[in-house]
Length: 471
Image (cartoon, rainbow, N blue to C red):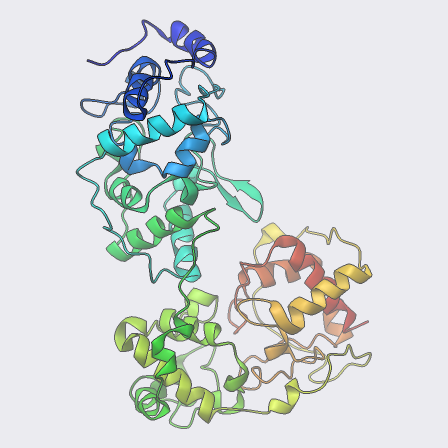
């Protein structure tokens, strides 16, 4: 039988008192201690038997499936008071808009409860290894995050976005969901949330099976520093890549836009704006493998480039992606001299200047942004490192050139050409907010990708360094 307190008032009083009532007989075995704690303490607020109920009939979340839901290390830390409350407004936000402190157990008590969860509270609907994340990449997680946002999940749940809280705090937070929740439970819950919390405001999203995989993987890895993302460009497919096979793939799939010789003059090119990249003028052997993989496998849109570039991964497979990249890096080497020598900031305008551009401006939300950082030595050095080496999905110099003149080895085949940062007459009219938005979200109608993984502070450091080119 379930044991419940008589009313909400006694429930909240019990919350404070039970923290001091954890001295149970030490002679009890681990299993019996866990069972005793669950029955005598936990069940005053949580259900451990029966069918799922509406949140509005409960005092705390149903835990009939607690063993399938929670990862043991997090559960022990939670029960011993080492984890923050996951309900900022409280579980019963309709009654009180303040999180209540949870009962704190001893380490022995917490482990005993965790044992009980693992042995007695497993849900048969949650299939072990129902989702395989062994080939889950960082870009997959980014897709899942975007789906989570686009389908309004952040209306109730908060996630972290560049160190800031994003979303409404009405329901459980997902700041470190990867440390807290088992992947198979997340998949089953996401498949039909009302199965677990009926009539409680839970939302059923219209996503594909692949989308469900992405968003589940995102939640299962978020905040879990121990998770190792898969890197396809380090796989056996790339070790066994064959440029001869890649040449055939290029002819069968890429030539229709990029042309037989990579001149960007395929039969489809005349109707496209922006035009396909001219591979023949690009030093693709200098591009990072991870960037090339993501462009070919997931398409241009996935990395903030042209949506005309299809996602070929499902068509040609990982081996096909590896093969065609091997061919392109062997065939198209452009002018590698643009990468030689030490990085330097020029004091004179070079390249196309002034620049006449008709590309769209970024969202108005960036218009009034001002660089909050000072152009200190440290900030300029950090910006230089990003520009010349470490920015992801690729270093800025690959297109804009090591001297900022728009003559990078990856920019020669791009139309419109990469921005010339040395052109003072052009750069003086580009605001901090405009530059911030272009780096953050890409530039519509150009080959400028998004750099969503760069932190805001790093973007501001990068902007300071870029501006030095025209000063």
